Amino acid sequence: MDINEAVKNRRSIRSFLPKRVTEDTIRKLISDALWVPSWGNTQQYEFVIATGDALERFKKENREALMSGEKLEPDVPMPEKWPQTLKKRYVDVGKSVLTALSIPREDKTGRMNYYGDMFSLFNATALLIVVVDRDVLLEYAMLDVGIFIQTFKLLAHARGLGTISLAASVSYPQIIRRIFNVPESRRIIIGTALGWPDNDSPVNNFERKRDPVEMFVRWVS
Ligand SMILES: Cc1cc2nc3c(=O)[nH]c(=O)nc-3n(C[C@H](O)[C@H](O)[C@H](O)COP(=O)(O)O)c2cc1C
Image (tube, rainbow, N blue to C red):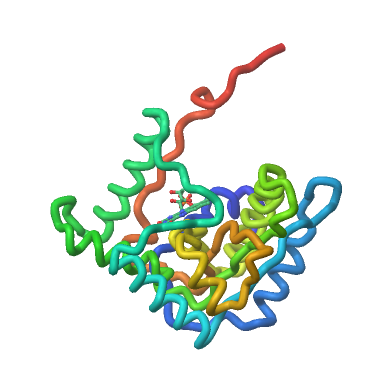
């Protein structure tokens, strides 16, 4: 697949088919993505790949924690407030998703069930969790992790696989630590769900938006 096409057509997948991704495929995706640049070539990320029964347990418990109103306590704090421009984009994508799923805004139960589906990873059959040593400087580690994840996503997309990074997957780190055996010495950064996308689902087909270049760039010469 052409790189321009891959960058433009990759999208976050919110409905996966119940079909496994082989361990060989995941290994190959990681080994190719490891060619990303990192600060001083430190390659400070570590990965937990969850599949099978362990993943099913995680999905169930993560969903239940949300539904029972447990407080979200991610290792990396999540933004709660944004400047107006950013807030609008955030709200817009939420609306697009709910519209694609035909869930009216006032349907509280429908929305809660949707969040439950998000916390159970939209049925994905694999989860890549990136962790870093608590001793590394978080700000730079986050840059390296971000570069890795996007590369992983593009490589997955080029093979017809789907991904979505999910803050929702790392909101209850204690569940991750217990089920996947992640020690306190590791900070859990972000999870990316991986699987075969349901390409016919409307939630994987709504029109995505980006602002024009002028919104982001100030040219100097
Ligand atoms: C770090 C990170 C965390 C995210 N967490 C969630 C999440 O918890 N739930 C969700 O539905 N989407 C989540 N997303 C997906 C974004 O909503 C999505 O990337 C954005 O709307 C742009 O859409 P696109 O990826 O389809 O281009 C996350 C994305 C990133 C990069």
